[in-house]
Amino acid sequence: MYNILVVDDEQAIANAIEVYLKNQNYNVFKAYDGLEAVEVFKKEDIHLVLMDVMMPRMDGTAATLKIREISTVPIIILSAKSENTDKILGLNIGADDYITKPFDPLELLARVNSNLRRYTRYRQADEVDRDTLQIGGIELNDTYKRLLVDGEPVKITPLEYKILYLLMSNPDRVFSIHDIYEKVWQEPAYNPDTVTVHIRRIREKIEINPKEPKYLKVVWGIGYKFQK
Image 1 (spheres, rainbow, N blue to C red):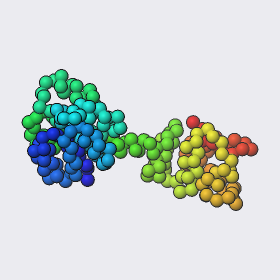
Image 2 (cartoon, one colour):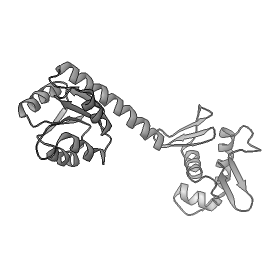
Image 3 (tube, rainbow, N blue to C red):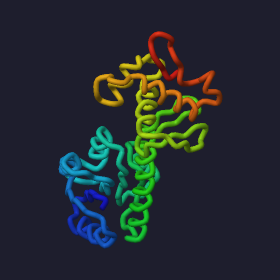
Image 4 (tube, one colour):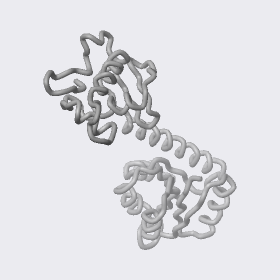
């Protein structure tokens, strides 16, 4: 369930918006001035803000700037001002959308839904990017434990994955066989020769010519590295 913060000094408007949003199964928090809005935002896990402009103590412009210092969640300005200069100001200070009062409830809900979809896609893409290692044509996604070679999925065992993830996370760093064994198996290197077997199998899966590897290189007398 998405949490939406409704900020408006007119309680009747805030209550009406709350009804519209709850009918769409959104969870609603309310604030009646900008200062209270910032306090609520810091305490709760808010996914979208509906922000009035003209309010006591701290107006919507100042509150939007404060929220933008700590978050990129969608902020939709609600304002009785319909001049283009007011809309441009709202967007320039960090708002994502602008709705003029009085507004159609259906338009409000459509804007809320649209901004939440866009933000959700952005966050999901960002999370995938942060969990993905890519060097050349080799891509490793830690969220889905997935290996892609030149865009094609390749089956890999859990131990092979852990070895590859260790080396790709530290490109060009040389790991000895003992280092790899202890970090992957999480125990002293009782049987380090097994690392060599797994390295050979990984090369067969990611290299065009495993005998002349492009990525998974041996450093003679020291160990292995994943070359950028």
